[in-house]
Image (tube, rainbow, N blue to C red; front, side):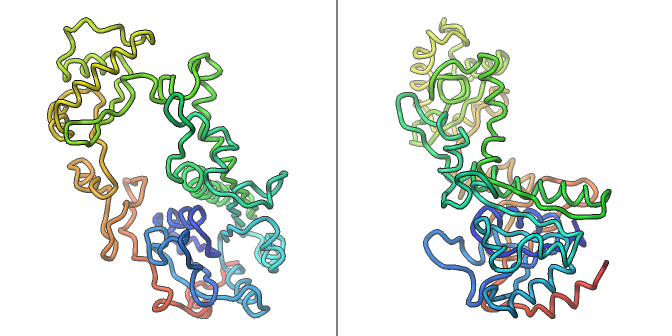
Amino acid sequence: MAGVRVVELAGLAPAPFGCMMLADLGADVVRVDRPGGPAAGRLAPPATGPLQRGRRIVALDLRSPDGVTDLLRLVERADVLVEGYRPGVAERLGVGPDTCRERNPRLVYARMTGWGQDGPRAVRAGHDIDYIALAGALEPLGRAGERPHAPLNLLGDFAGGGMLLAVGVLAALLERERSGVGQVVDAAMVDGSALLTAFLHGMIGAGSWPASRGGNLLDGGAPFYDTYRTADGRFVAVGALEPTFYAALLAGLDLADEGLPAQYDPSGWPRLRRRFTERFAERTRDEWEEVFADLDACVAPVLSPTEAHRHPHNAARGTFVTVGEQLQPAPAPRFGRTPAAVPRPAPDPQRDLLDVADVLAGWPQRW
């Protein structure tokens, strides 16, 4: 994406993640902060954390005419603008899509919200857990007989939000190459979270998801697709769905000759779970990793975010990198001919602030 110019109106979590991805892929992303720096508080990500890497920053007061004028000067030379306000806020500030695209018809105007630009909930507040709840993505998550359990804020904010935003921007830029004009991208976390359940809807339609939460093949109901506590209080993950991998699992656990119930007979699953639980508790997590090192049993150690970078596979692939002095995930996906560079550290709002003129000097008018 080298040469693509992105103006990012500073926000929280989803939009910064999408812009991080664009920056990782080579886009020139300029973040527009409010004077005094980004909003503080418990929910605000670190101003110099991974989500902010690879940017340049300017500070503009969009409640003032001068701030709006400066933003529109950037818009005139940009390829993309990203905003994460509630519907109508950008328009009230004077930087909505009609105004911006009047200045620059080629602009891709990307909007990141929870509920979308329209609908009964459009202007209401929400967080990841609310969006995945309404999308049908939260209800299936959790153990049988227990309440639904949110998987951090990974589904709504990042997979169904920021990543959906980045995909939309890329598609709109590609379409612009044919049409010569930009368009508005309405990326809503409720839509993206619903999209993530496409496979689940397929299983429901095929009758392959018959039970309630925690009683199906992929939600912890099947003992051969679950996690188990080991002797050291840590865990291993088991995903031995296919018969070949299941046979390797039984071999690694030394249970192949025990006369256990058939793999896909749900009436036998309680016994299987009991035996797997007992056996995994006999060794430590790392000992089990050694046992399964040469077996295709779909067994993996459950690693914490702070230890994942040390695993030999992640180390060999460079799945994590150090940016500045902070360990963080590396850009993805991988490209054979134009690999992504190691990201630049996030700019310091107090030290690295630029003037709009500094940005425009490197963004000559192209159309």
